[in-house]
Length: 113
Image 1 (tube, rainbow, N blue to C red):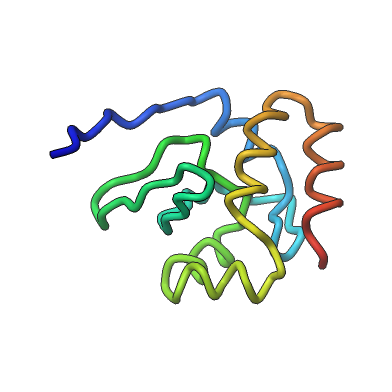
Image 2: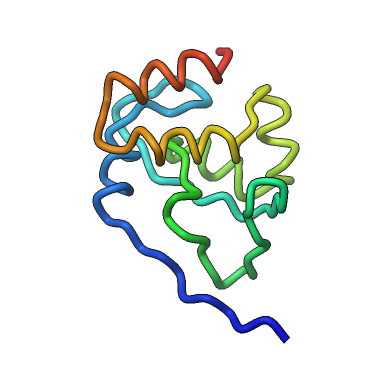
């Protein structure tokens, strides 16, 4: 039986994600750090339960309205409809954490609005 690893919390990265515009609609006023709950073992992202948040590296910037839509429906469909691979984008933004210029370039290349 696999022992559950403790969640890795990174407040500095969450603050960075909140400083970026919403990757869905571009709103740059009220961005939230939206955790990806869907699994994708290709990128090392395990499934989390409803009461559990994944590690903070699995976050993307969404405004409150888009964040609600992401969680109320099918999360994978939400990202597919945007044409975004959320696991690649989350890992790319985590690698760019703290560098707003690089993060904006990552978003521009991976997100089609």
